[in-house]
Length: 286
Image (tube, rainbow, N blue to C red; front, side, top):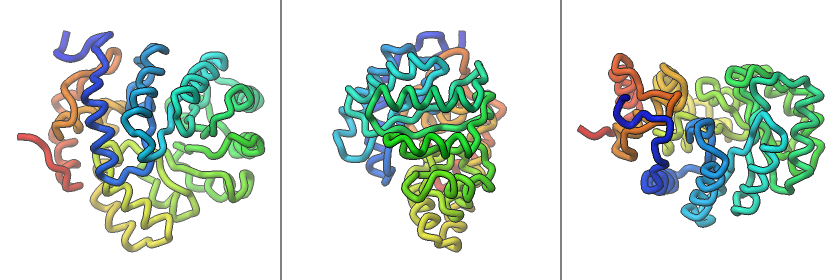
């Protein structure tokens, strides 16, 4: 079996602490614990909760912690969200139930049940490319009426949804892009930020991009985004988080390791991701 690629490679707690400090030092505005890039899909429930607790403790209230607590079982999503609430997370990010393809009414009732069971602020997460399930803006609009459902991460890349979501969900509902390639335009159109893959390896640049785009400074936002465009694209040459973990390894922030069924980045893609990092001005170890 390939080095560092096993079904049960251990969580590297020291590297997790290092990553948190790296992000805080580089202006990251909030950390998502146990998102896709955090290999949430390969952690068991006990590990999932342990990672949330560790992130909350290490961050120590310096920036908000958003815990990924979605599941395709409503009861599991409630348990994970309750764990995050008990651990002191500031909010939760809940992906739409995947694989079982619920109806729009099923999505509404699922998220309503979690919100009613656990009082923590909750952000919806719509990523049909991974879940085979698309939460329509009308459903998000219905859910925005629940007090502790405070926003949505939209990873469709469909910019026409921004004005529709604003219309249906109201001004107090936060809209976050989940698609780095279109995130600048999403924010210039009125979105409030991005929950980003690129930010895992270029946090300062993504922070600056958000700052410019949210204030409507297209010229400066475009200049920053131009240096990041290859990362936006090439961090997906294989499924996230494979390229991002390789990039962080090249930066010296973590050791080689990933859990099956994920694999280490194929050697054929190394030059492409390396070049994208260089274009963004990211230093790597020799």
